Image 1 (cartoon, rainbow, N blue to C red):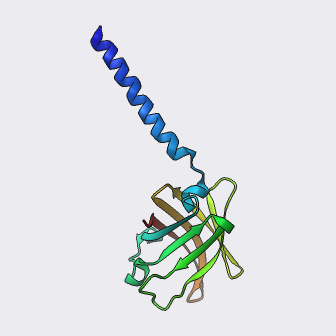
Image 2: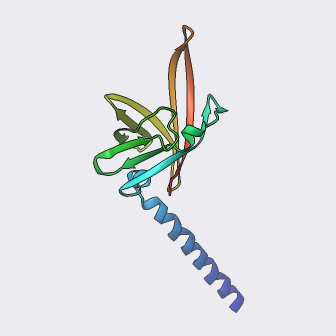
Image 3: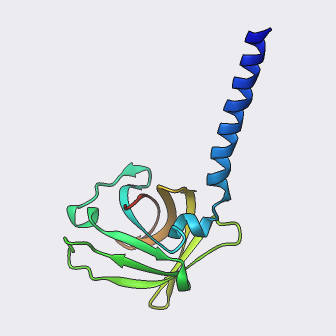
Amino acid sequence: MKLTNMRLVLLLLSTTIIFACSKDEESKSATDLLTGGSAKSWRIQSRTFNGTLDPIDSCEADDFLTFNKSGNTFTDNPGNITCGASVSSGTWALSSNNKVLTMTEGGNSNAIDINELSEHKLVLKGNSTDTIMGVPTAYTVVVTLGHVK
């Protein structure tokens, strides 16, 4: 009888801990996950181009993108190895269902699908069409970013 009660207590305790932990993650809004509540930086970890891994150049590996909650602004910083790029900035907005991130810079807006957004990981997917050698070519780019601490 005592063993059954102990198992019941352990089951209830473990269930409480599991649900308590998951509610913390769920209670954060997409804006707070993206901005860390004020400002949060993200760095590229991997990128695929039409499903094929696309190597990250050393000058891209130290770049970071910071999303600011105040004013919904972002800064794209090329890091120490710039490849000729300079710091740029703009504004961002999330769709009402938090599945699309729109970034506007210099009057140009790009809507990017959010495949995943958590405390430490942001996965973005963009589709586009470019004309390559006179032929319209569609492509998909998936970028995985990690939180910069």
